[in-house]
Length: 153
Image 1 (tube, one colour):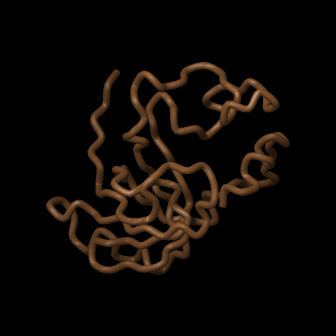
Image 2 (image 1 turned 180 degrees about the horizontal axis):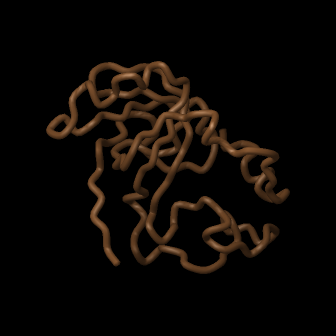
C-alpha cells in the first residue's frame, strides 16, 4: 500500500553535509510551509523544552536502501545488524526522527539545537516531547551502540 505524505516545511541552516558525528551543537531552523501554515500552528510549543522532529532522508538514492542486515557504519568489528535494529539513513522509508532542544520560535520558524538533518531536508512532522511519552523503565542497548554514539552528540 502506498501513502502520500507532504512535507510541512524544510530545515534551513545547520550542516550542508551528512557527517555522522558532532550533531549536538548543530543549530538549524525549521521553516513551515507558509502556504499551508500560519504562526498559530506553532502556538504553545514555546512552553516545551524539546520537540521531536520527523524528517525525510531525501538525498538517499533508492539504490542505496537497505532491507536486510549490515555492519553499522561499515565496521566489520560491529555485528551484522538488521536495518530495523539501527538508525541508519538508508532505511526502507528513509524516515528520520530526532528529539531536539527548542531554542526559539518566531512566526512559522522553529529554531532547534541537535537536529541531525542537513540544510534543505523536508520535515514531515513536529511533536512536543512529553515525559509521559518517553520510555518507562530502563533503556537497554548493545555495547556497539554506546561506542557508535560516543561522538554523535
